[in-house]
Amino acid sequence: MAKMSWLMPRALMASLALISVLGSAGWAQQPPTVRIRGTIEAIDGSLLTVKSREGDQLKVRMTDNVALVAITNIAMSEIKPGSYIGVSGMPEPDGTQKALAVHIFPEAQRGVAEGFRPWDLRPNSTMTNATVAETVASTDGQNILVKYKDGEKKVVVPPGTPIVTFVPGDKSELKPGAKIIIFGAIKKDDGTLEANRVNVGRDGITPPM
Image (cartoon, rainbow, N blue to C red; front, side, top):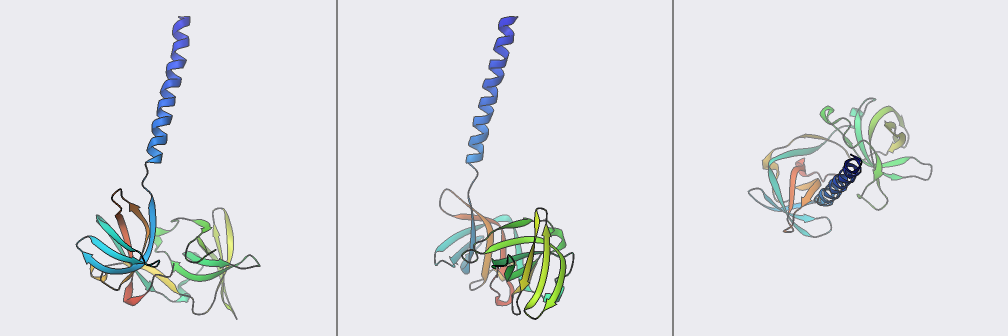
């Protein structure tokens, strides 16, 4: 019995080690994702040829269940207490964020990617997804206090800042010349990219986020 009680922990430890290795391997094999901003050059069925903002030509295959989302302008007056918004911004010396663009999420997307993080719109830019706590008009634009689960940010939205929202899109909007952003295309082994959501600027809009 003593021998059996000694063996069982060893067997358990070996099993746990194997699970750990397999779990690590599975985690390591998660495909990398790529954020794409660019212009559609061609479309062939589900395959998009996109010229990225960096000048690269990319092949992006849309999944069968791809979600097509249009980005459209909306009035700043639609930013109200309780709105869930995303702010692409630049940090100011006083700790506020100067908005480069604001997007208002549909209610169904409340809570998506909540928080404050670095962003790649411009060097040193940030992204804040949060709920509007208060908004006050001022001489330099709109001052907005937003709150997220780990903190809050004060945002200044200067006049002329792009304000957009997401609405259901249509495949007819995917055409040469249309501006798109794909937040998380999956990079495949053959070098192509796969997307289950494509956001396209409606009426010539360049997605500002």
